[in-house]
Image (cartoon, rainbow, N blue to C red; front, side, top):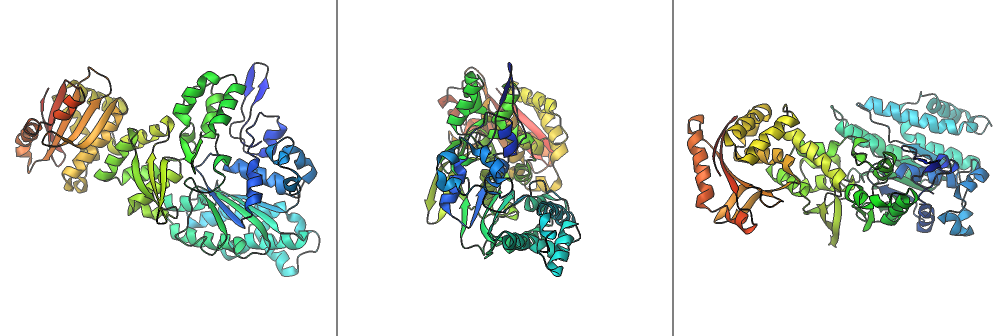
Length: 568
């Protein structure tokens, strides 16, 4: 039993949306997806420290809760009943003899989202206060000497210094090991949440956060004889800053490689069984289109959060997973998009495949200088999936695409947000309707309004590259009804933008852009662009695809001014 479940009450079915406590699910007699084989795999692996990176809301917190209830000394006999009839019990006594035998420290950092470094250390202090309070019995038995007693109380009552906080986790493991006479299991959920918060803060304190977390984690994980084993979950493997460089026996499982592939998320078989148990087998096709498509180490998986919310909403499709947290990484990509990035976004948005080099040891600041680092983050955080992974001389090369319809929606939102500032969606829809109908005059007016709202002198200084990316961005609205193609060879050259209808009998559109030297030459420059469409026979590609009618637009830009010459 692991991730989600249902209770049948008469004709009603209740799903525990948002419940991530294993005991609560089991004692509620929920129909659950059994993921307890994760415990067996973890014990068989025998790694000293295991780091598992998965997108948010894929069951990481539930997995950590399950491990806690299985291994902890506290209430061991009662907790044993939670695993009755599960895969781990069926695995045999070799594994069940580990149940209830170890002191456990479970920390969750997922809610730490401070805006300043001082706030981060304060919030981590609160987490440590809770952990120290759970083992308050260490104060009541004259076990600690005077110095350690004072230190323990400093952490417990929120009076510890930053230096004391940095060593507090390692010290707690030491106290517990000496008290119980056996090493401690350490579980840290969403270890990298404070680091992401530091990176995305208005006044970034990324370097300070990295320095703190490095000492905080290595005090507990590096050469600590008080540690039986540790399991950390997160979204990214933060490696370049040497957070984990001192750990020689770190086992890493990511979305690209590693073990435990099916321990997070629902497999197609598990999803089909849930649908059958709920009497909604008729919804499998819709579920697959919207919430399937993730591939972790070659294993196909559904988004568990979205699947459960879909059933809970009466099988009405919606954007569930993407509304649980910010879309900062995609927003960052779009806000810094160059023309090449915009083309890649549109390509992905239309369901096409992009080839990238994957560096799993990325850092957040790399996304400004290394496009592959950014796409690695999108892959790791669940906004892309790898449909083919190849290891070449120690480097992973992946062919990636958007996993499903739910995720595609957020790309559309963020692309349009970037390229339609100050303009309502209804206005954008109206402007593009003019484009599709061949009404060049009205389309030019709408395009001009957009340009005035989003363009700066710096943008327009990049000339045609900016204008190309700008128009390409707002055309995201037309996907998937149309296929938007950029810089495609046709006839005797390359057109700038082509819009191909996916249904027969609907006109296509070809656009050629030019930058005028001055506003006085806008009209003539637009006519030159239109003439180039005919001279280079850009319509050849449309004829080849069976598109008979094509609207032709020659578009000239100068600063924030635009002029269209058109023909149909």
